[in-house]
Length: 230
Image 1: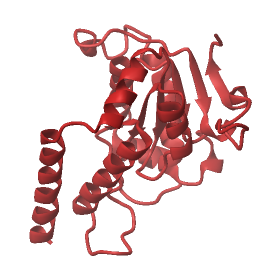
Image 2: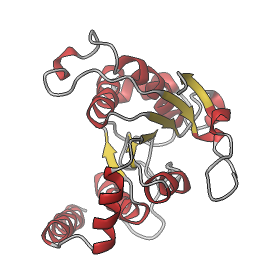
Image 3: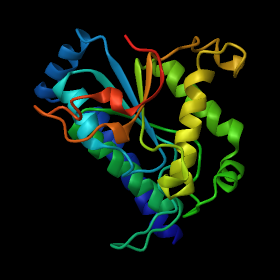
Image 4: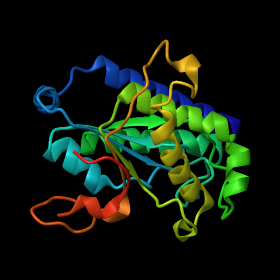
């Protein structure tokens, strides 16, 4: 197990080093230049790798040329692995690399928190206890303050209908962070590095269905759960 984890870790480091050493393809450079002229910034928040809505990320990042990112609270350490023997931290390394590869395709950026995927649960209190409510909330607030999104999209509703307790908790923390990021009394130690930030709108990804003309939804307001319009 240790040798397997060491191999996976070394492979991940080598892959990242290779990416840094290579010049960006001309298509990526052109996309970055187009994004300079776009004012909108979008952040999606959910619990695990594979929870993101890649159609939404692609629409905003490559279709609208907006700065777009996905915050996965965990790295998927507690998920299933049907094609290999890696579990736990080793699986988290693989899932991390999968997300980074997906972002190179859909054009979005990738963030993580310090929360650990400890496996399936339907229990929000258990998730908050294992993640550490204040620690996890601090991480989400930090990403919001640093990335400064205009729109925050929650991957889940924050209700029992989400099924998985970590899914539900990710939305609860996203809603709390939406408000906390704009409050100077919340996590003031961050303010010397990132000022408070108030996103203009908080929406739920369930409101983005099969819209027309390639848009995630013809009426994104259907998923609104908070924030102000404009």
